[in-house]
Image (cartoon, rainbow, N blue to C red; front, side):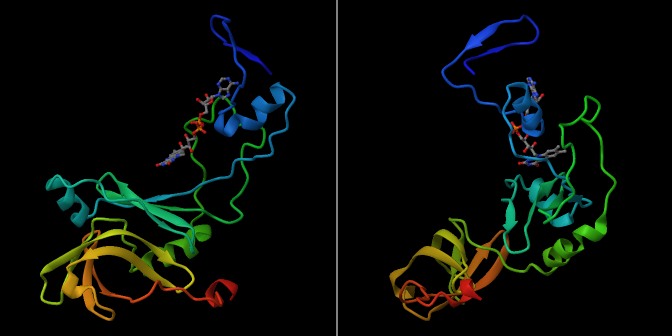
Length: 207
Ligand SMILES: Cc1cc2nc3c(=O)[nH]c(=O)nc-3n(C[C@H](O)[C@H](O)[C@H](O)COP(=O)(O)OP(=O)(O)OC[C@H]3O[C@@H](n4cnc5c(N)ncnc54)[C@H](O)[C@@H]3O)c2cc1C
């Protein structure tokens, strides 16, 4: 394929490469040029909460929107939406829909909700009580003085712990020092580790 012809004016655009980015219509547009594109859309349900006082308070203070929280183990994301939150699970085995592409009328169609399918995700979202640093989070000593800032962070799957890289006042950069880190408005306990936390036998990932 070396060219596309637009619908309206019938203008031909030639190109060395043509990229099809037709989303849910990918199979349909693939078929138009004799290519089988092996992707099928699936239903995605998400839950939008009522506005939450703590989020409204952040908005009133002019604070920026909070980061999107993604939970890999239980497969969902959570983010702000209109003063409340959206919980969007990535369901394993979500029902296939639009196998041959959405119909012309399907743009604003809503699916029938099936909350039972979402319950495992909702339960883990309710139980979620920790979060990883992403950078710039304030770090305090036990007296509440600012003693450093995180520069980055992630979840350490091999050791089953949240990890943060941080710049600390030198007197606090000692193995075992107990500190506090503030992430998305909540304060969590943190401990300075000596070496890179590495598990050579990789037991957690092999379990
Ligand atoms: C209700 C809803 C809420 C969402 N919320 C979020 C969200 O909060 N965050 C997020 O990250 N994602 C969200 N998504 C998903 C996000 O919108 C999609 O992942 C994203 O739009 C996909 O982009 P795309 O460019 O691949 O495809 P699309 O945005 O679907 O674009 C494909 C385009 O191809 C065009 N097209 C198809 N066939 C042809 C043809 N034959 N000729 C010419 N043009 C054609 C279509 O008209 C369309 O404009 C949401 C989706 C929906 C439906």
